[in-house]
Amino acid sequence: MSPVELPIDQFHQALQRGETTIRATCEQFFERIDRFNDVLGAFLTLNRDEAFQRAEQLDRQLQQGAPLNKLTGVPVAIKDVICTQGLRTTCASKILQNYVPPYQATAVERLLDAGAIILGKTNCDEFAMGSSNENSGYYPARNPWNLDRVPGGSSGGSAVAVAADLCMAALGTDTGGSVRQPASFCGIVGLKPTYGRISRYGLVAFGSSLDQIGPMTKSVSDAARMLSVMAGHDPHDATSSNRPVPDYGAALTGEVTGIRLGVPQEYFGAGLDAEVKQAVDTAIARLAQMGADVVEISLPHTEYAISCYYIIATAEASSNLARYDGVRYTSRSARSANLRQMYQRTREEGFGAEVKRRIMLGTYALSAGYYDAYYLKAQKVRTLIERDFRDAFQQCHLIVAPTSPTVAFRLGERTDDPLQMYLADIYTVTANLAGIPAISIPCGLSSDGLPIGLQFLGRHFDEARLLCVAHAYERAYPFQQKPPLPHP
Image (cartoon, rainbow, N blue to C red; front, side, top):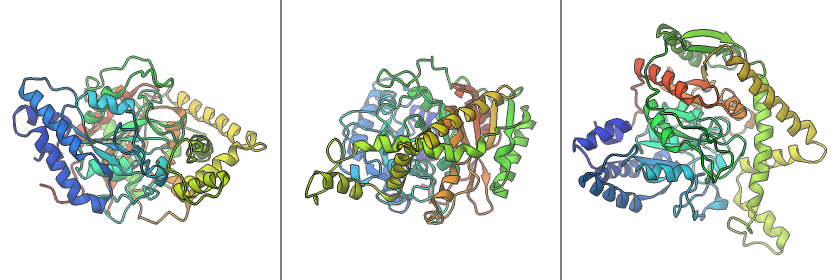
């Protein structure tokens, strides 16, 4: 099997047996990127020269007897809302098209310290605002399983890059499901850790109380490895947790006996596609056969999650994006006759339609006279949603549910109906509102040949159990189908 198709542990075994080199592996990935990126739109910026220099340096170190680190030689892609020192970071927005960060995000720095190689920056919805990757300021990414379908958003480019073997692993960000939903649409693994488990330093903020960086990988063990490298306290981020980081690799025992899995009735009602329901029901039955105890639970405030999320997220977005004004950040409009016009035209020309829509919604929710009616009430609902989860976890260890109510939809199908687009995140936003960890793994294909995602949600900082159960299912029922693209 070609190195581009291997998970990390098998790639490392191939390196140790001398069957490949890091340089040769990077060449194969860039050959595939050159071959498919014009069609798939996964990458916005490539890091070719620096990647080859680093690959040769790591090959020399291995030849001299250096030990393998957790990510030695692993080619990764980084979502373009995460700062990379000296490498363009646009947030898929015209307003930041020439921005080159002078510093490294902590998550990226930790990947590099563990030996990873950055291949480039991946496409996404502008400032991570979207559920389909159609809001990119440059071009949409396309689903490798069907080029007429969206890859999901906002981390669509990262999901496509992993699914199409354009990289070995990638970083995404999850504000309302933006790691898990595209992972589900593209048939890969997507992990959203507990809020604070991975530092947000260097992540361009969208919704600061919701954003979280997460790995997108070919397997659960790869996700555990990536998380173990990035997790831990960071003095640059006051919201990062100082809890000790468990050995996530050791947690992958393959054992689910005695695990109580809660099935929330609210996640299996109207709006859930019949094929998705059947695949998830089958997966739950399999988990029961493997030894898990399945119990029915209720999350009664789920119906308010989407409205609550979009009030809080847009309010935080309107505040966070105020800094992009042509003075403190971003390029400046050349058509301005005075200072007021300069502010207006810089933002008018630089932001896309979805970003403008969310800034206006958020500004309205925070405005005098409406703050109590919208923002404050949404924060109270958020507390009720978090309480739902705390009550549910008195009855079960993990919750199991669909990741998305449908498989990947067609490009353009929902662009004229923002509300319908927002409902794509209906099963994922609650984890962000509550700050709990969640993971999506593939559990089957629809009759159209599109992946279906199975989601597990866990207690705060219980990523080890989340990964254990997901890994056990993956090992018992491996998802071996690949997108219909030519492979070496």
